[in-house]
Length: 133
Image (tube, rainbow, N blue to C red):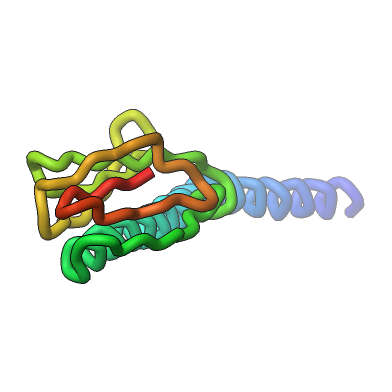
């Protein structure tokens, strides 16, 4: 009798282990999908913030100056870089070598005076030239 209940117990443990082995990768894939979606959303918010500041400076005119804050990390875990491509009229936020989001800007008359780092940055309309950094 004891031998049979031991076999049944081992079968139950084996079944639970098989279920665990199958569900773990599925849960991990869902977790990474959610994390990537959150990083993309946070990066898009940064790109939209920078583009909005540039567009406001272009719209207000000469002499406009404003400080704005960028978050220290995307999703509390990933460093990022912000690059302005004036010729393309785009602001790009990269957080890996191959992952980026962008936001459009209203003018190509933009120069990046220093890297846009997390923390405080300045946008200034200097006679029609938008200086960001």
